[in-house]
Image (cartoon, rainbow, N blue to C red; front, side, top):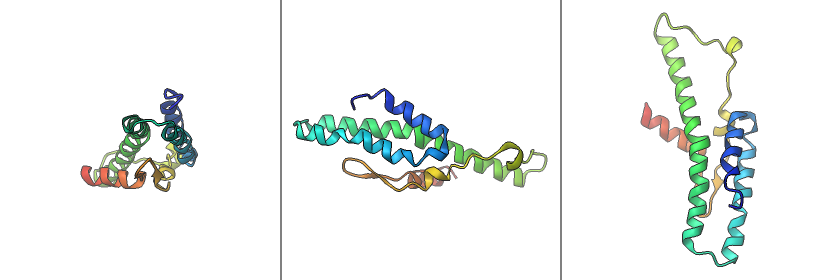
Length: 130
């Protein structure tokens, strides 16, 4: 809340290095720590909701949407390379594989009055898409 512009940049940095996904709950908690100060300071509900919406929209834009797109792309490439003759197969030993399971294995993260579960969001996206 105090350095709002820094939050999306830190989220995109974490997404760029998937092995650092364990930092995500810590980052969200650190940006949520001002909730207590705001509540004790007599902040109205609208401002608390604005903070919560900002954190959630940044998480959605910088982590969840790219994660869903990348997993969908990987699934489509895998399915098409197995089914269609003539498509170049993806060789994980030559091209490398980005392990996105670090994000889906994270526990649900607590917001002000609910939890965000990245795995269930990705599952919902894939169920709607396929």
